[in-house]
Image 1: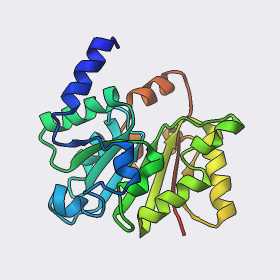
Image 2: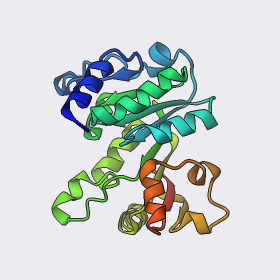
Image 3: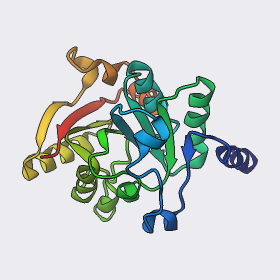
Length: 224
């Protein structure tokens, strides 16, 4: 994408009523007004809130919102040119149960209060295989603790990835920490019992992985 197109999208992002772009200082100083108030001030209802972390163009957020209109969805990503697509589509389709936040996931506790989130989806994150990159792995112990701090007591996390490494790493970590694994499969498209929303919603990258013959893994778990 050319720099002119990116600039155009960044400018358009500023006009989207469903896209929030808090500054890092604003978050670090706990000045984000929607924290603890998403249902009351933005969605104007008490429906469960579901997050998609690293949402990219928002394909999963959009897909889930169609399937579950009784829930609220928030896509989170740091890439402004990508999140533009999801926010724009949601506005064009008049989806009132969707919002997007452009931010770093490590600051998730600055945007959501304890017990404010019902579910978290992590879709095709960078597995960060190299040891020195483990601090950026979205299912490492530090990130799991952050999620636990914002999830309701019975909240669940979904991990969908083409990385057998990340799938295995996360299962081992959850078992070691004593968390509840609710569902796990290393190749959902050869398993007819995979949840419908897992096999029937596919991102652009997932379709590319499938063309390459890669297995898609899925894990659903609860932090105890």
